[in-house]
Length: 409
Image 1: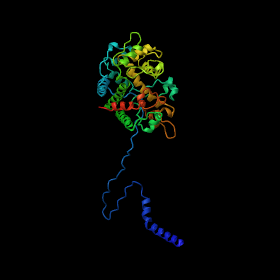
Image 2 (image 1 turned 60 degrees about the vertical axis):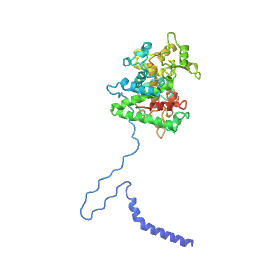
Image 3 (image 1 turned 45 degrees about the vertical axis):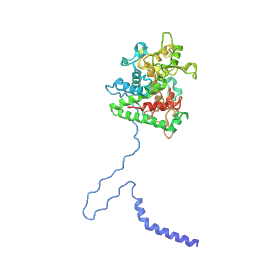
Image 4 (image 1 turned 180 degrees about the vertical axis):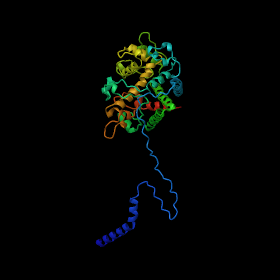
């Protein structure tokens, strides 16, 4: 019985194969996505149907490679087009404080507030922040050679690819990439990640427009970065700048003849070692010229050689610089911290010090001009000063992004 059954099955299979072999052979020879040719006419020729094409790919286009030249449009007015509009939106978000738009007392200014003629009579915190952003929209080489060994960099600053706030696209982030770049700590929620990508996508859109010569794209990029930094200034200092506690700390550390100006926060962090316990101003920097503001001092001195700051300046001098009434160097250092962080990711020679998207499948790194950058990097991986960028408290990053993405941008 078993043998007979097998013979029957073989016969049936042969019949089925014979019936469908012609059709199968014809189908196997037809190219994928090819439109079948029309049947030939019986008598009179007719016009053939129009040729069809495949739809365009739906993948995201590659972002333009890095730029190393300024693309600031002619006639750009950072104060009229950026600082006032952006400051108005952020001050409205923080309507109980409104610290960005009041005119500050220029008579209480320090020498570092008066190094750039473009800032004359533009004495609002919003002006100083937006102008610092504009300075850092210009490609330059970060002065990080003295700490190169900590970040997988060459000690030769001249070997760095110049970068800016707009030179490279921003990386999108996921919980997986953030788990890597934040060393598995304080990974943001899905809602916060969505906002981080909304910010990155908007900035990349404006960057593409600016690179194509669209003036409005550049203005929007400048405005969005300015809002980001203004929102950070509230998170860092402006909600407690004029508190009684700030005044007590200022009086404790004030050098002879110095008085804390309005809006300038002094904060003493008992969790920090003595050399970094005092934090001053808009973006809370420690008045130690040999500490983590030295890269800012070096970059400031490149821009303003006749108005320089010594890298061995005393604490008293740095309190006056960081605690000045107009906050010029404080704002500059904040923007420089961001471009310095990006410079590490662009010029790093180790995968550890850049975003995972900059690492090829074989483990090699992409060329510096082909990399993206991210603010969301842990200390040690990149040159990151700001805990909110690292979601340090579990909510600060979301607050900054919510503030930045509120209103017109």
